[in-house]
Length: 215
Image (tube, rainbow, N blue to C red; front, side):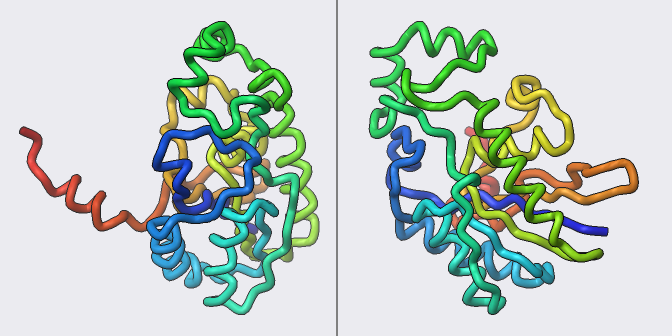
């Protein structure tokens, strides 16, 4: 059966600082590069036959690490870009909440509003990312494995679109993919199914946190 691994990029300084990136073209931080190296070690064993990445730098840099380990070429795919958040790009979460309270309240009610007045809706992201997914699997051989390197909201929108999950319900039920973690989709006779979610190699800091007793 065919498999598609949907992989979120490594951490950036904007991720660490709680800043909306959207389609700002940021690079991986040192921590993000280390995350990509650890994740690539694990993913290199999965026998991927295609490697497709958002054309934004942080996703491309993440995919390049896996390409170096597997010999695959990275195929750039703009439709796997993160949601465009319009005028929110470059602002912190606190700044967006202060400047756009009505939009934030609408999101909390589950409404799929245009982000930052000039950006996209989740439905827009799901449509373009799903189209990219279909083009990839159309050329994927039986038992083939594809890795798609993308972004936080875009990965969830794509997975929900492929397996038929309501995005708002999934957002409440599933923690978003951590940096450099992935989801795994498997094709069955009746369609695609989500076999794994938020799989990855923990950071050293995360391991220490998990091992520490709660005070």
